Image 1 (cartoon, helix red, strand yellow):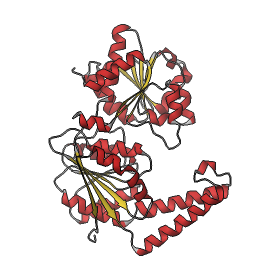
Image 2: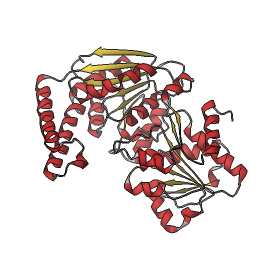
Image 3: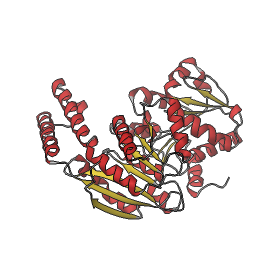
Image 4: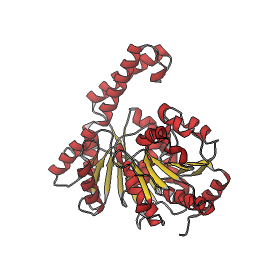
Length: 397
């Protein structure tokens, strides 16, 4: 296998830092790099046992099992330990939910090389204790290490601040990820909803002023803490679930009707509403979220992959893990203040193809979304092939 230049550099970094983290953009080949690390270690010591730990079974089954097989590790030589299977081998795939059982059984100590996939998920109190267990070889993989609770700093410390970075900007420059057109759609709430938004924001600001902080875990007064949570949730629902966004999405889909499209939102009910809105327009779509049974998720994914359906409506479930096919258009309906989700979702549409990708970003003006967008705007301009802002008034459903 011919490695990409960044993978060659990362392998050299691994040889120097056997305890290290690799922040690499989605679609650039993190898992292939990690498998090359495994091969290198096994060449030096064929007795080394390797455990790959992931927060999602779909990542183990769809990404790691396939990639290991393609790179010379037959499926029958790889063990899987999760809620369904209890197999151990020289290379074992383990779900993070099952890792505690493996550690308590004493089996974990026999593994010399541990790979923590999507390592940004390990920043909780419960999972950090797994990271600190010493191993001869230990690496973490992620598209972005950033976390809202700042525990990524603790993760970095555990790995002795040995961080190898290969971000989305460089991946596009190197031609590994696709060039893309970025279209920001500016939307405005109607007068009634804007008044509701302003009133909720006023209540939030009063609580923050009275407590000297907007960080919920730092507010000692339980009543204020609960009220703040309530107001933040109400405001987010008002913005994310606004019918205005659904109207915009439907018009965007119509403009790109022959493209392979993924629509990201934050709430399962939005996907359901969009599904029926599109059905009314005689447009077929599929849903993947936690409301959908596993067999139906697989069916929907296969239909999308095999072009039986070209529109996928999803939530955070596909932010990481699913090995999505080449997508032409991403519509990001809601915004998150951290870059983690944004970068992961961008990566879903930037897999290499012959034509430019398109990313539509919905921003409701005079809300927190506008502030988030303006913080991100310069970065987007820097990495996009073309950048457009549209003041959009969607047609009624």
